[in-house]
Length: 96
Image (cartoon, rainbow, N blue to C red; front, side):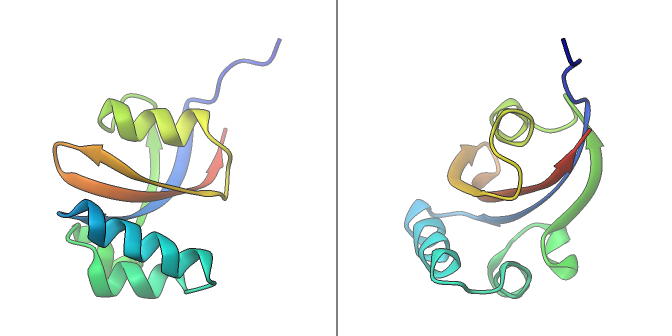
């Protein structure tokens, strides 16, 4: 049995309102560029890097975020995901 992934790389777009997150998600589904939307809309400091959070270990992020990154399909776009920080649109780049 393969051991579960403990390291991942993801990017996200963080906004305060669920309706704004849903609009961004709709744009992404139509083919909009994730990085450009992150730079334009995200309230996270990672916005400057197109939403790129770099590598992080399981347990470093809040649980709802971790659950998406470590359990859902890689490269798919997930959200809106509510945390204490707001609403996230999340894309896991890879995990190992």
